[in-house]
Image 1 (cartoon, rainbow, N blue to C red):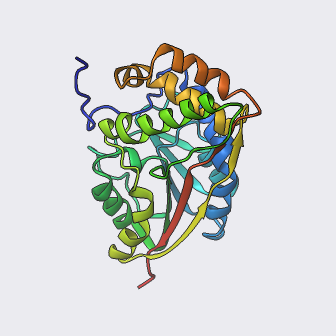
Image 2 (cartoon, rainbow, N blue to C red):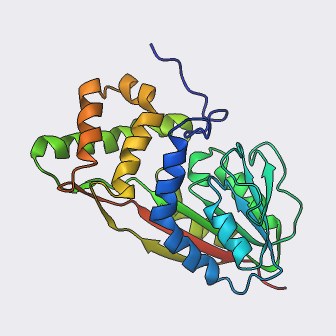
Length: 266
C-alpha cells in the first residue's frame, strides 16, 4: 500500500527534481504571453513595488524588473531563480510565513494557489498587503473539463491521454491538495475581499512536440510513483512519452483564468 501524501507538507512539483528545469521552460513558453499582457494592463510599473509569488524560473520577475519595477521574487525553493537578473530573491513559505513586508503595488502568482490547500487564507493575506490602488493578478488552470485529446494517430493513443488526464485531475493532484475548480472561483473571492475584479480566460491547442504537449510527459515524470500507484502502467508511460512528441497528436490546453483584482484607492 502506498503511504498517504500530506498535502500540507508536499508541494506537487519539487524544484529539486531534474524535470523542474523543463517544467519552468515549458510553462514560460505557454503562459508568459498572457501573463505579460495582463500585467501590462495594471499600468506603468516604473518604481512600483512588485511581489512575484512562487517565482519558479524567474521569467515573470525578470519581465517586471525590465519594466522598471522594484521586484521581490519568492519561492519555497529558489534554486532556479537567477542571480543578477534585476530582482531580489527570497526563500519563502507562503503558507507558514507572513507575506513579505509591503504594501505592494503589484502581486502576481501563477499556478501556485491551486496547489495549496490553504489557498483562500493565502489569497486574503495577499490582498490585505496591497497598497491603495494596488493590483493582484492570480493565474490558475481550470482542469476539471474532460476531453483533453482533440486529435490522435489512433484510438489507443487518445485513450492513454484521457486516462492520464483523469488520473492527474481526479486522483494524483487532489491527493496533494490541488483543487481543479479553484480557478473559476477566484473572481468571486476577490470581490468578497473588497477588490475590483476582472477576469480573462484563454486556452489553446497543443500539438505533439510543443511545450504544452511535452509538459504532459514532465508531469508524469515528476509524479511517476503517484501515477503508477493509481494504475498507470510502465507501458502506459512509455506510450504517453512517445505520443506527446508525435505531431499527429493535438491536445486541448487547460483553460487559464487570469484574474486581476485592484484595491480601491479609498
